[in-house]
Image (cartoon, rainbow, N blue to C red; front, side, top):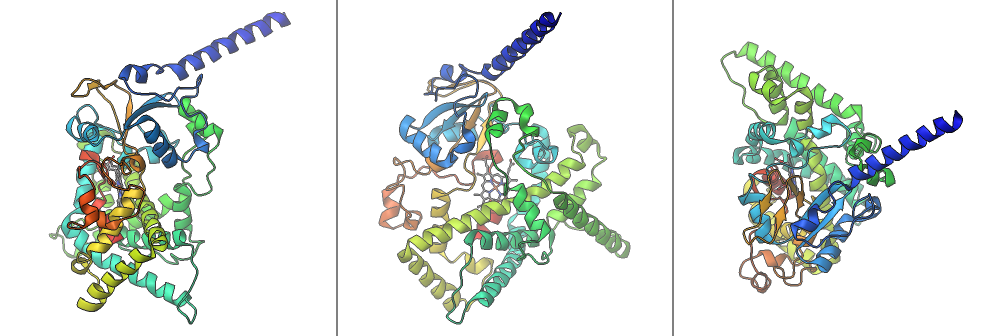
Length: 466
Ligand code: HEM
């Protein structure tokens, strides 16, 4: 009897194992048929079984050098084609968008993350994106400029207070940049200056940092979840602290209360949508609309849009890298200093506003060059929703394949960038020798992505970085 039971259990275990292996290997072969060089997959954990131990940007650069502008790999069980060729980037991300409309469906182990704009599909994405566009118009960006300048002013003031009598201090650049970015983005998104933003124990700040991965160790379970997505629950890519959504809800409730009291005084005046908080309140008021119901836009979807503030991480990462490149290139730093002295301190007498920041071509070029060498969002992606063949017939992409543009490799393509590894802001300034040496192609430099799903916050980001 015991032998019989053991036999049944062994049999069951074998069947389950075979099913799991079949499931894991289901897509193997898809990339080989596409006609691209493929990083050979392991038995059932995809091409990069130790994903959690790799620095992805370095891997992309190495693979570009090894395989050229196109290569495929299985991320767990997902077939992925990496494209560094600007003509193909244009074809896939822009021209043939009906084959590549969405990103992958989010599987982050938490529905509130799965519902951020980045991961919404089709019609639902279209509706939310259209509604949010109003927050990033030229008029709004001009309006945010004053709030951003105030945040910059407070930041410099607090930095000065920390300096010794020789005007020197030591700071952790990334922490400092996090603080100014969080302060700036909270002011433009919610119209509030967060209390104690500089206190490293500020709960909201800590919550955002945790959400962005601080303290999260990626281990082999994380790599395993790439093959078996149901494991994401055990190995989430993010930590969500209750304080985040509690704070968002508080802000929304207080804005709603403010609106009710204002409209009781002026019932005929329609309140404009001034910032993210207004947008969220507008969405709440539409919760029962037939459109929202049809598209499945729920309270979770709305709250997830508040997570746009996590884009502060992109801004902070970029400012940190600008500081780094300026520190290791003192000549460039000196040149930038001169421009700021001449333009801001000279011509505009220290005034920083939307007009003056656009009179600084060298600063702008330093930002562009940093975004070339160290784009913070490393791999914009699209999911193929309908089989696609490239115009010359050499590349065949099957439905379900993910296409990525690995930007650290794309932006270092020696075909388009002379001395691609060198930090040379002049390459973005027309009329310079450096500018003339690069071969221009609109899709060889795309730090904010391409096409309909490009970065919605691009203009705000550029304004903030300036
Ligand atoms: C240096 C700063 C930033 C960089 C380099 C950056 C870059 C990007 C990139 C590469 C994408 C993917 C685009 C694509 O797939 O084609 C993206 C998407 C997005 N970004 Fe940014 N971003 C920045 C700042 C911001 C800011 C400040 C916000 C908002 C406040 C923002 C909100 C978004 C959103 C919501 C998406 C998803 C858009 C969609 O799917 O419709 N980003 N960003």
